[in-house]
Image 1 (cartoon, protein in one colour):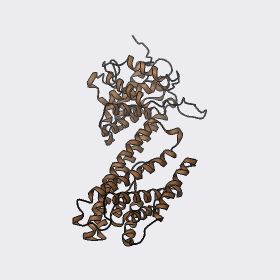
Image 2 (spheres, protein in one colour; image 1 turned 30 degrees about the vertical axis):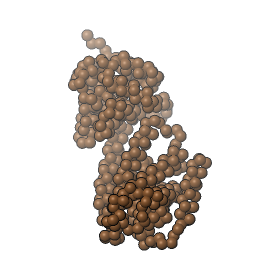
Image 3 (cartoon, helix red, strand yellow; image 1 turned 135 degrees about the horizontal axis):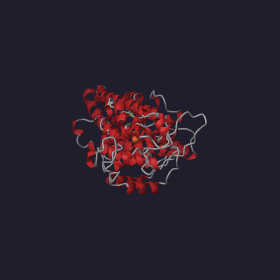
Image 4 (cartoon, protein in one colour; image 1 turned 90 degrees about the vertical axis):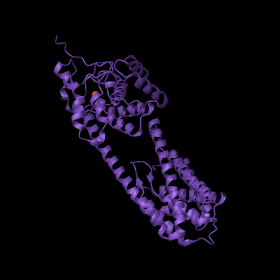
Length: 450
Ligand SMILES: [Fe+2]
């Protein structure tokens, strides 16, 4: 949270005051403090070990299970005190204000969950055999309220503190997808709360250990996966950076081709893991330009046959560069064939129609579209409507009509954030591509040797 708006401060203040007032009202008599303390410690440990799946995203912790166990064992007031223990979590990053808000948010949601548990006929205390199945409905209602209140309150503060200039539809769409996944995983965790409370009557204070140890092991595996993802992102990012420092005018192109390809992939209902692979393919589709002599990329006049061949070789060079990167998998086919044409007149293999891998046919559409809507050294950016017209014109000869249609539909739904025209600083050492090989409206000029 940077400098906060008045609305954000009022919102945070209201959440904090509500939490304090509700908890302060008690009652505290009859509260089993030994449970509160023990479950509070569990929440502190869970929060201290929360896993951030991606930089800048929400963290993932198992504390909701402990809070829900406390709803059953110690009721709304005890549960809100347990929730407030998140304040003591040892975690780097959150500011004081974020901590205060998080504490109030967890206290408030645990309190509300506790109230709903009672309202649905739940009884506070150690559950036993006879408590089942009657306890399931009130517990499920409490779990739903805890998770919904957490996500609702958090979404509110994120919405009020979001950077105004970075709310592209794509980013917010991804945010909604992530929130839905977190919501589901939190609901899954909620079930462990009931398991913990039920086991308590049999094994006492060992119950949380029996429940949480497997959870911590599972989370360790997720952490490894998250670390691996970060390493993938860094690898792809470094290669992209290397390609784009070669040409000022194509900076950001890889990222936008990646974004466009993902839009098409989602529009046609591609499976999630393949969407992720095509994202990488978009980022790396032109990595082979590293193998094309800079003087060829910079040449303003007509190219010789040999020079044109050097450009046409870039998909193969790209494949050579990234072939050994295991996680790219299907992305490799996209990189190698992104300049094939449906009519068989593309390169490097001259494949036609369905012979061209699906990833390559998707990339070709996003690639040409971004090239046309970006500024080049020899022309300004063309408007989106003109670029769509051009895609339609070459649909069926250069591009797969199904993917042109999918892209146009996705553009209508999500829009497209056009890149800013580049401003070249005098001391910038980047070179400039004179003829863009991706631009279908301005084909590369080759010296006619006949
Ligand atoms: Fe290319």
